[in-house]
Length: 254
Ligand code: NAP
Image (cartoon, rainbow, N blue to C red; front, top):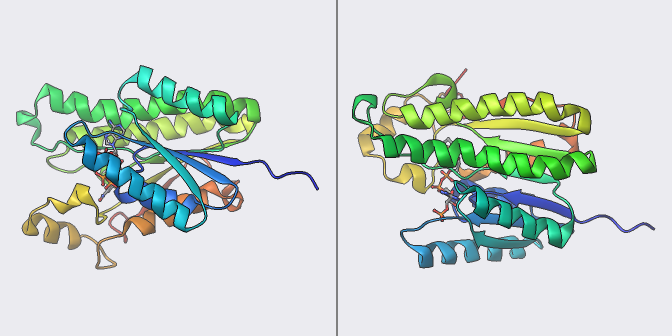
């Protein structure tokens, strides 16, 4: 019997929230997950969060290893992928999940808040995709999944930087899907709605209720709701789907 190839998965921002749920959902015997995270303010807490993801993946018989890598810095991303490729020789799945918000009304938005969000949410995904795509093209196989947002489609007052980054990510998804399809690589985006994570935990009760009132299914989403869609897009069952934006938002956008 021929030995089954190891499946190599890279997830950005896997230490917490949706990224952690994705790592757990993709974990399986024979799959190695590499994820990064980056929090300059509290490195010890973030390293502990990353270790917790590794532990949770191991509990479902998977294997995960993590590294602090700022996806906004091209040189850090190059080194991160080089280590993975030197070790494994392939990348089967890339999930561009890491993202941040720095909300504020447009007329008061500082240049650094615009740049920070665009550099992480959009440029980071571009850099990771560019590196992974080269390996996937040689393999003639790959799955790329980009974490967009419902507000990348609808817009949202107070989130000019964030919604622009997510709209840009949708454009990147569609173009990359067209460029890479002939090499057996699919590229899709997921547009989550209001999901219970640290990112939304700081919202006021009023803002939270206003968001929830826009959800026809009447509840906030869980990271596992998003991870299930990622697992589907990464699976062989989704091999004929590319260039699409899958909304997982309880119907926030219909
Ligand atoms: P989260 O709980 O705040 O987690 C964000 C993750 O990204 C963390 O692992 C964080 O690492 C990592 N990260 C942040 N900046 C990074 C950088 N420069 N380099 C590498 N990693 C970085 O967020 P979440 O709610 O799970 O969101 C995950 C994705 O879903 C994001 O792209 C977000 O925009 C999108 N999304 C979320 C919602 C929602 O309602 N939560 C809705 C729509 C879309 P540290 O732990 O080190 O900080």
